[in-house]
Length: 239
Image (cartoon, rainbow, N blue to C red; front, side):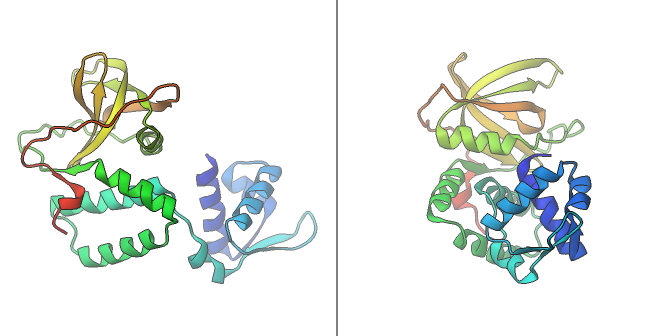
């Protein structure tokens, strides 16, 4: 369990149980007492008010008044919410769209200025369209949870992204491309990259990507990505 997931699990446990011990939290998240103590300290630095009793068996408690005000989302998490809402709306399966828009607007307003800048850069690369009714959907798989953070780091830092890819015939290759855009054709999601080896754009189904990582000693320039007429940027999607 990575740090972010561990922190979320600790806050969730304290919120549900009211109080807990360091040993119980350590068992729950699969970490040592020392790691959990560091996590508690980091959460306090983020603004969570966590009370603790002195002694090895002492309990810890999250002040309920701090929960709503201090919950923080990363840019990829906000981006994931936005593109999930956009994908559902494009597919016609979002009955409470106005409420979703209002909630996302509040989240965006709470972001620091630098995160808003990164989020807008993210949204500029997002395009939405309609999937062909002839598309075979029988092999849709689960997307690697590390893909969006890797895409964020590579796209914002203008670094190449490297990943394993399984094509429609089941062949496995290692690819390294410039992450130029993200395309959503519900229910399929694609990473659109410029492939330097082939000198052209390539579309990679995100559920076929594995082990994504940025290539820090690389760089690229933004390119205009040609899309079909029925694909529009996220900013032009009618909400």
